Picture 1 (cartoon, rainbow, N blue to C red):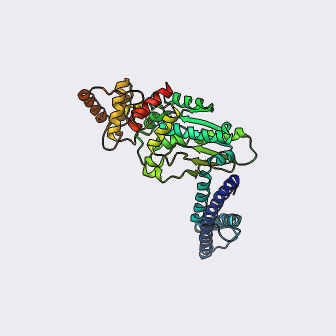
Picture 2 (picture 1 turned 60 degrees about the vertical axis):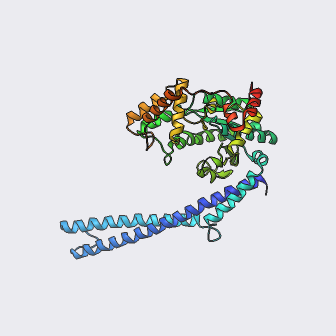
Picture 3 (picture 1 turned 90 degrees about the vertical axis):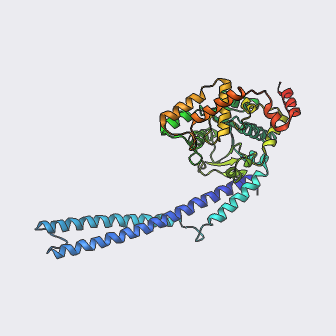
Amino acid sequence: MSTKNALRTIDMIRCAGNAAKAYLAAKHAAWDAHDQYGAAQAQLHHSHDLIHARGGSDCGSPTNPALLSAVQEHQEAEHTVGKAERRLQRAAITVQAHRPTLNRYPTGPIRRRATAMLLDRLADHPVDLIRAADLIIIQTSSGKDSIVAMHRTVAAAKAAGCLYKVRVMHCDLGSEWPGVPELARRQAERYGIPFLLVTPNGGFLGMVEKRQMWPDAKRRLCTSALKRDPTGPVITTWVRELGLDRQAYVLNVMGVRGAESASRARKTRLALDPRTTSANRLVLTWNIIHGLSEQEVWQDITSNGLEYHPIYDTGLERLSCVYCVLAGPEWLILATRVCFALELPHPQTFAELERRIGHSFKQDFTLNAIIAAARMLDALDGPITWRRGDAVRRHLGPVAADQYLALTR
């Protein structure tokens, strides 16, 4: 099966799933409408009996208040029956419209297995996948994984002769380490790729101030509201600019590695994104470096002379917000000591927000406790120091660090 046929099949399976859901919803709506119609009919019969019990009839003017009330109830019941009947008719039409041609739709497990098989085959042939795509968006955080994901995507796009399809997008949360947006731009410029900087309204701290609550592992609003949600409008704009008269195929590249966490290990190299996929675009999330280890990431950075953020040289393993809600106390203490060394205002800014909203940054401790621990360590050991290339030394050894520094001098 060709790559484009595989993509069309994936979308057909998606449409079948949507149709199956619509058919089931229509059947439930029809059942509800039938029940409502029966209840309305029962009420109508009751009001009819009530009129006759009070000496009246279905026609003619009522002669006493009790009869007047019964007639009004009868009229309301007739109106309800009419509405229920029309609702039942509409539900029946909807059921018929979504009725499967072969009596039933493929079951959910069958659809999922077929989609997963096709996506896995597509992921094995990145060059063909890129040739079939109309738009390739690299979501970069400027971190080490994003750098390598960008480099590998560009290499595949060049091999396919399709570098013109690639664009880079970075969401600036306003609470990251200094120089992150500028680094993202330089990384894109290295390959001559168009770059878009998205600044979500209010940023991370504005979101926390509005909610009066910090995010946590179960409610990762910093990811959903500030990174994922802004992606949809950007994809809409870029797909519209393509001017296609058919469904566009979009690859959304992410620097996600399975070795980072159990939840990320369950992700696949290529996945359908049902949130942003629509009739005019099929969006696939491409975790192009999903199978790489951390050492392999640093090997790619070193071998290709890729610029990484100096914050990695301090011993911090991830480039995210200065204070990440998913980080443990040791990570947060080190981040605070780095802030002290760089004379950054983040510890005070975050701690003041914590006091103002009355909600602890983490369930088990406050930022004030983290800051106090960082000050104590600085008093005992002195301010932390680091050198350029320390991240490479830590992961690959001094020889690799010397080679990297020579390559990027």
